[in-house]
Image (tube, rainbow, N blue to C red):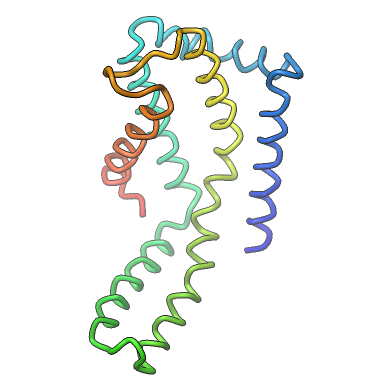
Length: 176
């Protein structure tokens, strides 16, 4: 657990470092724009709303694949199934019943296992996502911060659509 958590902290600090260098060291910004402008930027230039939806869908599909293949899906499923069964069992007991207290302790003991399993994909995706978000911010600022579907800016649209696509792809790919 400690190793995964320390690696995650290292990746996040590295991401913060790159984020801080975005405007101060033009090489970071230049490399990211050089890679994304001709690809994702071209897609946005075709039709900004449809292009952005496609980018979000593809990104969520890739993130879901990474989550599926970098986590122990069987262990996650077992932990979640055990948690559901324990919740059903807990309803049979009063809150102060010794059996209920013991079951709560077991649930708390499972949290670090679940947390460790769920953190692994973040190690691989945090830095690219941070850089992509910086690119989105620059790109949409240059386009006068468009409103998508007449409602939200780029971040709100990303947030809502990423949740929707994530739910869809997790069901299709059977990710736990």
